[in-house]
Length: 235
Image (cartoon, rainbow, N blue to C red; front, side):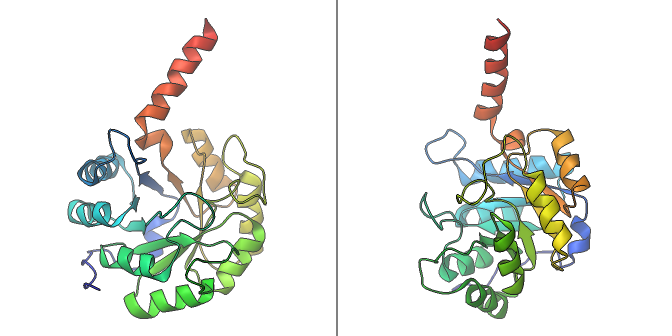
């Protein structure tokens, strides 16, 4: 395992309080699915005011680390169903080595492909890399379990995708407020279906520490579709 790429950022999460984090990802087969393009997207997001970026894939992480000096939340999607967001310790270690300051992993209570528990994965990642861990959760029980397992950050990324909660049209404000009320001691980052500045503000008002926005900023195919659909409906 190579040594982690150095970052000028230090693990002071206070710099992310009430800030925007931009997720720069493109799906396989799309025109923008290129690590250099995603690094450039991250640069543009930082110019626009992003306090951090969320990046998927080792190559994307390496190029983005060289392009920006803000904190990077790194992940590695492997598969499409079940536990596929940084599903194993090996995936997590690779993200840290590629330059992630914070490694996002599946933070649900579902079995992990490598047989390790969530707590074992978080402990090993802390011990071997010093990176912080963001647990992508889908429910209140997930959040409790992830906090108990040692996660540094709790995210609502998987709300509506694990079968425990309905998929809301916008952000799951009820879940955000519910996790915030638990007082888990780990910052809560809202993520998932946040499509407007007003919705981002609503997440903070519901108790989120910071907000991740992806599709509405960095996925032009979807954004174009929103406008095209609106014009069609208007006719």
